[in-house]
Amino acid sequence: MTGDFPTIKRGSTGKAVVLFQCLLYDLGYNIGNAGIDGIYGGDTLSACRSFQKMNNLIVDGICGNQTWTQLIKMWWEMSY
Image (cartoon, rainbow, N blue to C red):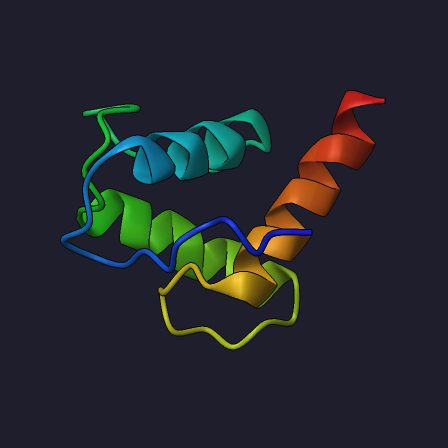
């Protein structure tokens, strides 16, 4: 399901980070004052950790396969 999504973490930049931030934002997570900027900084890290904790995932602040899968699943369920 999410095999094409890269693992992203603090310091990552680009389209995958933009998508990650958009999904978090849509689900109500605070991604900070910079908003959706494509930079995985401290605010995105905090939002990631909060999401992981709320979804019983390993809380490491890294968006890998398990985090992407749960994030997309939750976003999809919210959208329909």
